[in-house]
Image 1 (cartoon, rainbow, N blue to C red):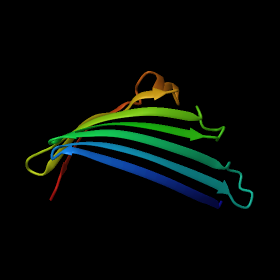
Image 2: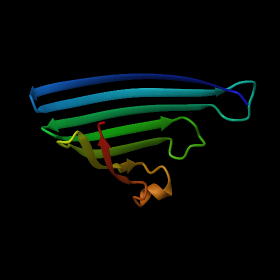
Image 3: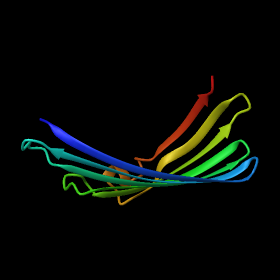
Image 4: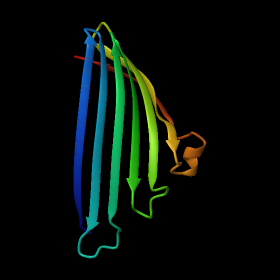
Length: 133
């Protein structure tokens, strides 16, 4: 089985600094994946489009971000064909060059991709720590 994949992506980012410790970030990205069959393989072709929009605010050592995602597919085998999700996160840059992040992915998801999403189990809370070495 051989498949041929083709991807394309575009990204734009703007950052506005209001003073030394306050800034606003706006990021938009678009990606497309087209995966087609070669030599008459029995697997269907796959088309995926993803759009993402992020709004972030920096105030001193704190950063907050809201990220929206839209994923669309023309594949009839995928349930739902379109998913919209919203992620939220807050980070604190520590005085000892570390970063502590708390947030959740999939806070809002519409329409539900699977019955499991409908009762909120697909939400993914996280706590992450990174240290600069």
